[in-house]
Length: 583
Image 1 (cartoon, rainbow, N blue to C red):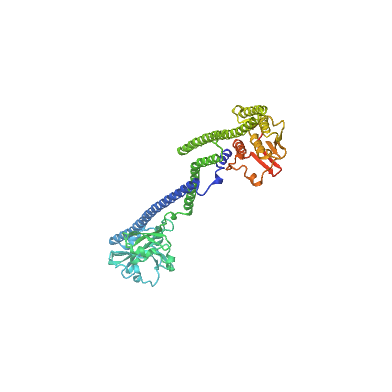
Image 2: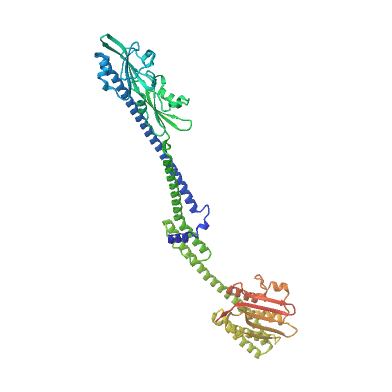
């Protein structure tokens, strides 16, 4: 892990501090993240919609199935009760009433509270239990008795009610009334048979739950509630919004929007044996139907998916942009002048091509730079030769002019001496074609020149040459002192009314080779001294000095060259500053 982290820091350390909001890394990461998140949200939305629809269909089918099952159970139960009444009616048709109840007691069930027979006057003929009836109870006024005609052979079911026939007993029952006929020794009789069914049995059949907070209830004729699990709330005035809808629906299912944004599924199933309807009610909230654990799980999955998407987006954008960032870094190094930089970046095809092109570009730039350097060297050499060619003819012209003057004066010995000095001068000037000679040769060269000029000016001036032994073997550009000395003679000591003096020094100062040429001539005005090295100066007297200065700077750079110091009537001092090059 530590090794991986170090590698990560090494590869990203130069990149992360330089990230910009519009960088490729940020754009790719942001774009892929946004696209992936939008796609994920769309998928979640579609899947949520499909899951909601699927759960709604499942709830609808489940509600319908439960309602159908309960309706079937109640139908079966009521059919059994009717069958009991029919069986008793048939038995009564051929037997004495007392013998029927005495001989067929096995037909009674736990869910039957009582079976009783009343004649058409409301008088009890027979019942299945020993509980005493209340005194002064008018049976003919009971709803269950009045609902059928005695002896009519039809039956009716009453709503759940408290049976008040017995002393100190008030049981909730559903009464099945049927008109019957029977015969005995007294003749033929008509009456009403009462079968009281325990209401708890009906309540248990409707106690099944439908989904979350779902329930079942029974609606009878005239849209009256037969049974409702929240009967006490209804008695308290809290209405059930599904009851009016169920009353208006013959059979089937309907989805009803609620004020709180939810939906209510109402399923109605009509009973076969009576005009009652079984109603199943449950909420349809899709995924919200389930408890918070599922919702929390889905939220956790979405959050984890978002985190994974962001991590993958950042990783992919890093893998794509990191090679390009590294190429940018290498380009910056090349821009800073490190032409030895070489790219070893390998990634996708396009990056590999860029890396190869970068290496080729750097190689060509390096070649072009070397070519430019060589061309500059050749150019400087050509300019040096041109300047050198300008100096030699200039000096030769002046020297030949002096020889002519001496020859005209008849001084043959001086002519021979001057020509000999001139030969030595040009021998050192040529120096095998090299631009550099030793300091000793340069001093010898200028001394030959001074010999010639001193003869020409008839010993008008004297000279001295002083050099440190350490500098005599150092390298220097040739023909530098001669133009400076020539200028000192012509403009300094050549026309003085008193003897002139030229002093030449060669020494080392601050790690540099410095020549100093000093005369006691007329000196120069400040404005003339200021423009003595101007490149646009065309004065013949300044050509040699300017050429020396240009040759030095072409060869060694602008840190080297000529320095002038002069005062009127006191003289001029010229310093030639060169790099110290030891042989």
